[in-house]
Length: 121
Image 1 (spheres, rainbow, N blue to C red):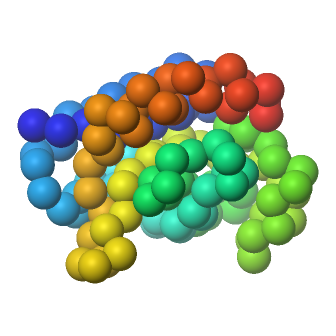
Image 2 (tube, one colour; image 1 turned 180 degrees about the vertical axis):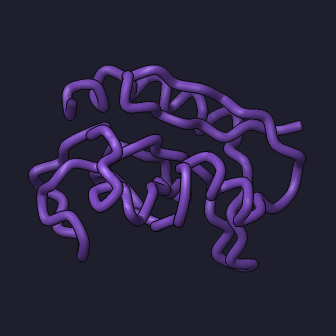
């Protein structure tokens, strides 16, 4: 078994176990609570290379609680607004196009960045 990381609006992290290999769309939808939008990185220095952040595509529309606010982010849907609902972190494989579980190094990196991410609340 492997793990993914989820940052909840409460500030709590969870590390749900997933089978080794590609992470299914159904799994990512369950983690974010609906339709999945790949956000990429919160800030260039906030995530390890190859790790993407996923969020609920309809988070603002359905009134999910704000998770983190990134004024510098200029993505096509948020323009400095907050990211809402649970945020899932997965590894992206450029060769296959699959989302994969995180490595131990990725999880440790996210734990070290927890204070930095908390400052975005």
